[in-house]
Length: 283
Ligand SMILES: [Zn+2]
Image 1 (cartoon, rainbow, N blue to C red):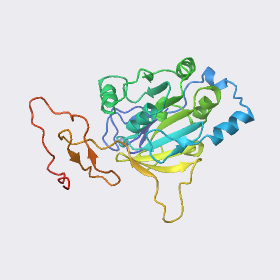
Image 2 (image 1 turned 120 degrees about the vertical axis):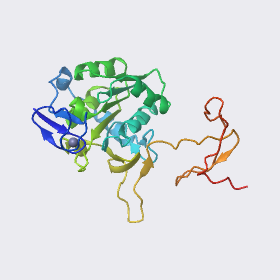
Image 3 (image 1 turned 180 degrees about the horizontal axis):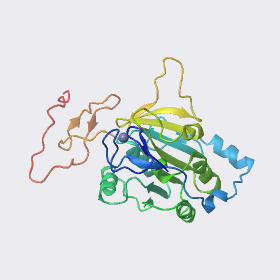
Image 4 (image 1 turned 45 degrees about the horizontal axis):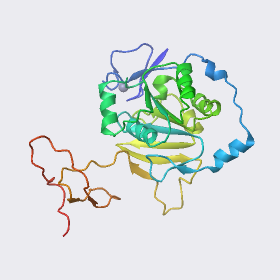
């Protein structure tokens, strides 16, 4: 068995207590294949009509301004730890209407995952979270709930390979979107293999809470030299403390001035205040 650090890429024969290469704890995962599952041998069958309909149905990918997906898509989010992949995956699922499942094997369902969901405003009852389960258990939930989207976070830790993710789309009729969260170490390598990027219909590189479209089967990524790459912040900017009715300018390119319509959260007893860094609204 080989173990590899997704921070720095160092490999080990046995699981180390911490990574000697970068000093991180909890960044070393096992390389390998998951156990063979029944879902792997399910027959892939489709009609030409279905395939054409899916190919022609192109729509906006939830949570990703400017990014398009087809009627079925394998979307890969690749980036280093802490870059915002999980938050973006959560936003994509939350914005997708219909039952969805988040397979969170890197971060077990618990308080910190709950806090992330709360921070992102996710509270749908049909947004299911699986902490650990084998491939057949996950597939059974997807089938029984007629889920339209699933995220595997991360494919390295859950041992899902690119072709197995594609297979899910082929054998689960309701499933339209598979979001694969993929660790990239600091050398920029996708941990394990590049086959994920080859298989992906849409690939987004996530770094420092910002996502860039690097591959798409549904739209040009490299336009002419004037075209800017499609790039967007993973999180919408947090509104600064302000009074209802205040106009606040969010200091980020591409965001316009907003008028607050709702109370901003203010700690109990504290007076609302302006962030000194914000310019006054022009009169
Ligand atoms: Zn390391």
